[in-house]
Image (cartoon, rainbow, N blue to C red; front, side, top):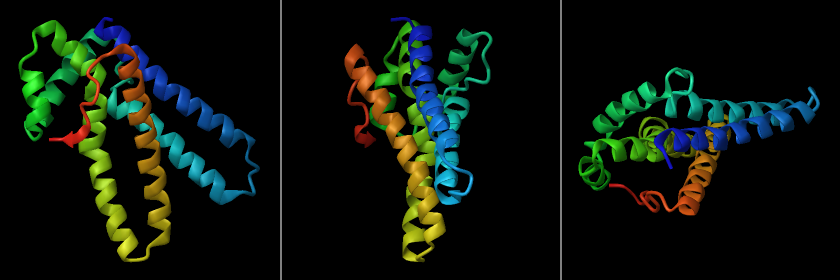
Length: 168
């Protein structure tokens, strides 16, 4: 598979979740405010995965976007020796494949999900149930995307198990 095909597949996985969430939201009566809020938070996390993780708002040309994402991942991976070792040993073409397959997840974990878990721990200790509610939804949405991406990578035999031991 080419890096562009992988990039599109990662986007499609998230977009499917986003659209499913929107359909569920559309079916919930306006009076069910808590359920609607939960679905809106979930939907927006899927949007964040596509916008921030995959930089999908930068549609043209996707090749340039992948090159830009290689630079982003290169800076982040310095904090994760195991993944960085794999990354730094790749040739230019395989760097794009690695980036297309893993960069969004690495970025989302590093820039968002790790802090969400830390915030959740604090919110639970403070018995801040509103924050716990929102953070559990945010974490759950991201984790469901990560799981779907990994399942896809397993089917394609492409950089599987890279997160099984964490990002170290």
